[in-house]
Each structure stands twice: as structure tokens, then as C-alpha cells.
Amino acid sequence: MRSWVAEGEDPAGGIGRQNTPGRSGRRRLAVYLTAVGLLLSAGILSLAIGSVPIPLNVLLRLLAGQPVGESSSVFGVIFFQLRLPRTVLVALTGAALAGSGAAYQGLFRNPLADPFLIGVASGAGLGAVLAMMIHWPYTTLGLLAVPAAAMVTGMATVGLVYLLARSGQDLQTGSLILAGVAVSSFATSLTSYLMLSSQGELRRAIVWLLGGSSQSGWQPVVAALPYVLLGLGVLVLSGHSLNVLQFGDDQARQLGLPVNRVRLVIVTAASLATAAAVAFSGIIGFVGLVVPHIVRLMLGPDYRRLVPLSVLGGAIMLLLSDVVARVVLAPQELPVGIVTALLGAPFFLWVLQRSRQRG
Image (tube, rainbow, N blue to C red; front, side):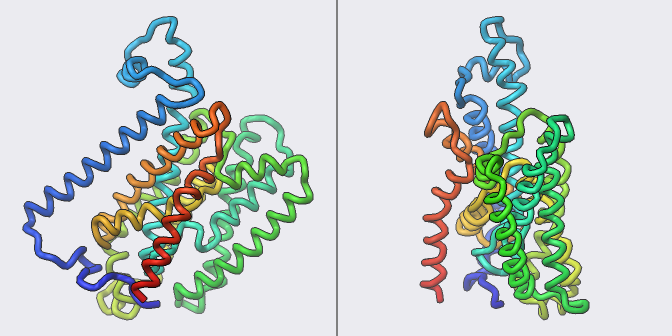
């Protein structure tokens, strides 16, 4: 598979143009500060808007930890027990999907790769539907049965794809993609069969598969947080390795990069973050495709910047999409996966057209 780095760009060190160190550093700082500012703004919108809007003055007092009057105590309950954990979980999900998407696009050297390319979503969907059919008792363990099953089967699917694609000590990206497509199709077929044979859980399964989760409170955040942070931390630290991989496997080996080991680490970390996000938030498409591509168009292909900025951009996009999902049919809520698909599908078609024009 040929590299898709544009002419005039240096994948090992960023964009191939002359910049003074001071100007380049100030520009990077400005970009990061802008991204953080947008993330904070999106977070405030997510906290304020919903079926019960929280006035800005009350919201600011709650964020500052200041007491509110008795007439506003209901806002405190909504803020701390419902709205704040949901906002944090949505931000973690968007960050995991976009960061993993950036890593997969670099690993496969393909701008159309996304976090679900090698089967983690289809495997997680199969596990979630299986857990729904079991009718687990409504206890603390029961509340986590669906996301736990989704995460385990998602990672197991990726492991199976890796074993099928591996040939001796070598692992080709083409074989990984083909094995992922085959296993994903098989898992999706099983999921469809289980949904058709279990009418009672059909609506719940469809909502989950469209990116809607009934999990609320801090428990899902606490459960997903370590896996997302671990996976994204490894991906952020792998930026230089992803840059070197853009030259192709042979040249990367000549430059001293242990290609197979790096590929295994990146696949594992990206799949772990994606599986944790999908387990608690359902299957949300296009975030991992759209956000890294936007960041790449704006700032170039240097993965040392592309991955962390995709993490921030993914959190921003999903927070804003979640706000839209709450208000467009208020007081009912759309699954956020529908909103991201409506936003992402036109962008996906534009990427296809742009790739076609470039040959």
C-alpha cells in the first residue's frame, strides 16, 4: 500500500516548509490553546443545554463549587448526578474514537481508515446484544453487563483478526484489513440473527447500535476512564513511530523501527480505547474518520501533533453532536450516532471525491 502523504510534506518531521523555531512553537501553542478553548466551550454548552436547561449564572456557580439557593437545588442534582458525568463520558468517547482513528489512518497509510476497520465495533455489538438477551439481573453487575460484554468481545474480535492476519513473524496491513472485513461481516451477521430472534430486546439493541446508551451516573466514567487514558496515552507517545511508518515497512526497518512490534502496540492501544468508548456509548461512526482528516488538512501529517489534536477535536465534535441530539427533537433524544452520521457522511463523500481527483 503506497503512502498517501502529499507532495512537499515530510512525514518524519511534519510539513516540508521553512519555519523559524520561535514562530513554529508559538503557532503550535496557539493551536493547542484554541483547541482547549473550544473544548471548554463545548463542555459548557453540554452542561447547560438539555431537557432542563441550567441558567448560565447557576452553571458558573456550580462549576466554581459555590453554593446555590434552595430554589436552584434541583439544578445541582441535575448537574452533578446526570449532566456532568454524561459530558465527561461523551468527551472521553469522542477523544478515544478520534485519537484511534488518527492512529489507524497512520498505521494503514489510508485517509479512509477508522477505528472500526478491523472489527472492534462489530465484535462489541455482538457482545452487547448477547448480554441483552441473557436478561441479567438488575444489580450493580447487571448494570455493567452490556458494556463489559461489549468490551470483552470487541477486544477478542481484534485479537482473532490479528491472529488470522499474521503470517509467521510478519504482519501485513493488507492482510489485517482483509481479515477484519471477514470477521466483522461474520460478527454482524450473528448480531442481526440474535436481534431478529429476540423481539423483546430489539429496540434496546437498535438504540445501542446507533450510539445511544442507557448508562448514567459516574460508574461508566470510572469504568471506562483507565482504558481510554491508557490507550490514548500510548497512541500520543507513538507519534514519531507513526511518522516513520509513512515511509513504508522496508524503509522503516532500515531506520531502526521494529515494525511488527510497533504495529501490534498501536493496534492494541487503539482497539482498547475504542472498545472502552463503544462499550459505554454504543457504536458512533464517522468521528474517527472526520476529525483526524480535518486536523490533517489544517496542520499537516505530523502524527506528533495530529494524534493529540485529534483527541481534543474528537471530544469537541462529539460534545456538540450530543447537544444537537438532545435539542433537535426535545424532549426526546436522538441517538448521537445518527447526528454524527448525518454530519460525517457528506464529509466522507467529499474525502472520496478528493482522493479520486488526486488519483
